Length: 336
Image (cartoon, rainbow, N blue to C red; front, side):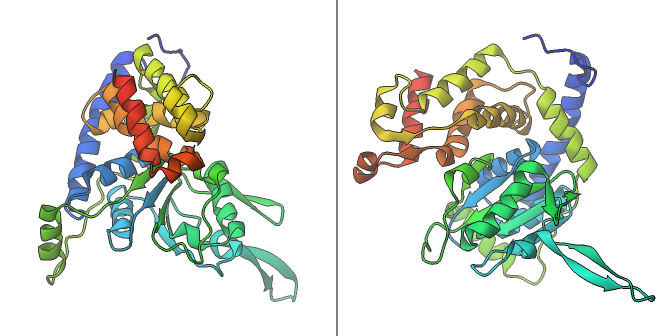
């Protein structure tokens, strides 16, 4: 596939050389994270993919499965300035964004000064995002989409790179405000965090209840992460893979000729799903040690990319179907 030549795009040899450097960096990142997070390979992989692709991730799982620990570990390993916000029903937008305070100088002149809130971080942990009111959620989601905030008519740019890793507890629905569909779409991936395997849980028990806990080291810094993110966008994608992305995303929409989708899906993924798939497939290739994305990448990413961008009909839910079942069926069809 011929790449469009722009001044920024590297020629193929340079891309291969840059990709090989990135492969070794990503392998080192994986190794360092695995010293602290045991098991949970697909969770770690998908979360890192979201960051390498320049996006945000929503981590869904019951409490105590190391979601917060994963985010703080990633902050340290990627050399990013990290902040954490614990969302609560009484949290206000200014608690996230910051607020103006009045200063008075020696001569008695008063002026306003903006004090930055915790959103001014490179890696922001938004813990239990569905606990905050819609007003506060939307304040965070504007910054996720636009990478700046506006306070009293004044624009403030967020640091680069800027990633939000939000967590959600699927059990407690009392006193929560589920994220609206349009806001879920802002998350590149939804990562389901399940209970650890037996061997991993044994390791957790032994490693985390002693005197000394392993501390991860920084493998790269923010500038290097930005370089890898740029490289991901320059990696060529074959027509076969592009066609597979389009076919899969479109098959998840009702009214596009897929009988099971028409029967079970109320509304399907928009173009953002395809964009997410294009970016994450390239990042996944690098993460797995390859220089080009393949059909396997598309099939592996189908669930984390599509599940929060579609909804089932009432009839399908009444039959006990889940979105994951529908996506698994679409992937099976795509594999033929």
